[in-house]
Length: 403
Image 1: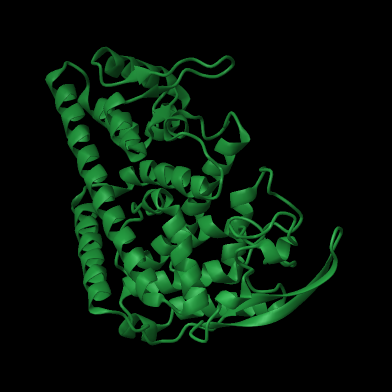
Image 2: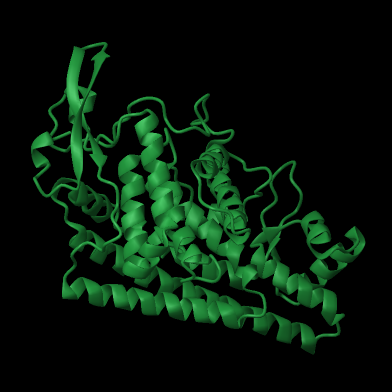
């Protein structure tokens, strides 16, 4: 890590760390510990405040759309799958969204897809936690991290625990070949130990602080909390994905959002270099203004994109139900299957049976009826797997996330 990059305006402290390297022997360097967040907003420019206001307006429009829907939960799973794919790609785990949308969550065909579906399971768990009104705790985040890495290449004895060893993040472009890894790293977060765990608990308490809710705009507060979590980097793996999930959790807890359909990672993934650069400049220069402006632009664009996707899915849902009404089908079960096909991009007869609470025979009949109407189609069969179905129009809307 380039220690000379850290200026007097840095909102943290460089502390000494030491260790032994097989090739280089004993070494001494420094890690960065961010200062605790205050209950005052960082000094921001008028331009940044205008961007923050635009983000708030876009989030309010998204929230208003969700509140007007009869069942906004139908759109949670498609949004989560799109978010899972992008947030995993940011951390180096990539699978095309088309593959994610059509895969069997219960039996993912490879470890990358398992990691992505673990994110969906983790987010579901987190949203239940919020809906139950339970406070954010270190134990809760540790539980989420364990879910995220379960049965993946990153699962270890330390999974589900705040890390117990020093980690380094990235590599400096200008680092010479063969440089000591700790010195070649771009960023070195807080050392492990009780202080790290206490700092994480302080962050969670800050997120729940009533004074913060009054004094700091929720978009700004979400950006501050995201920076703090990433600079602490409390777990061995999954910090980026958990940190971006915390953005949505924070907006839910501050009642900016009613339903967690916001997908933030596609925007940040498309600008990953700027994303990491802005986070880094907060640590080195205290440049909150550029970072919050960038962060708010991301939330605004993400909210508008999510709202557009939700509106398109509502229109498709209505169009599919109108086609059912114009047919000779029994509308009740067929309409329920339309809702199911919107909420679950691909599915089997068994999952329809469980989801709609009907017999296997009835599920099979109504799926085939919607196939005949052209509302559903079949996926290419994979050996040894049950036949899967999907609604092509729904799939096309969600696949637009990759555009």
